[in-house]
Image 1 (cartoon, rainbow, N blue to C red):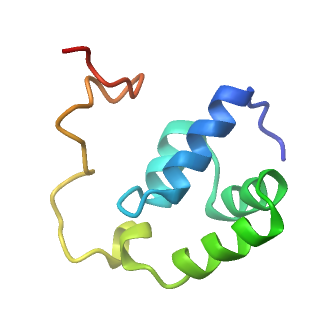
Image 2: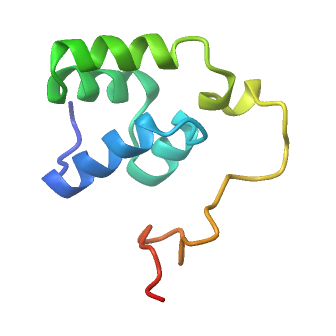
Length: 92
């Protein structure tokens, strides 16, 4: 992989890859990783059983691909998410 990612970024990418509504396009937008690079990252950083479970879950899922989604309105953003730049949950 040509990208130099720190452990915090790798953890965030794994978290985003597990989320149903976060597309591979969103990961590419934020971290510059293509879908195949995300798959390789997951393969290298998860246990084999966890990777197989994730691949089974993601394969063919419409919500992971921007062009296959049923809805058109922008990217999903949690109401508790402060800003898209740091992905931090705001303190209450």
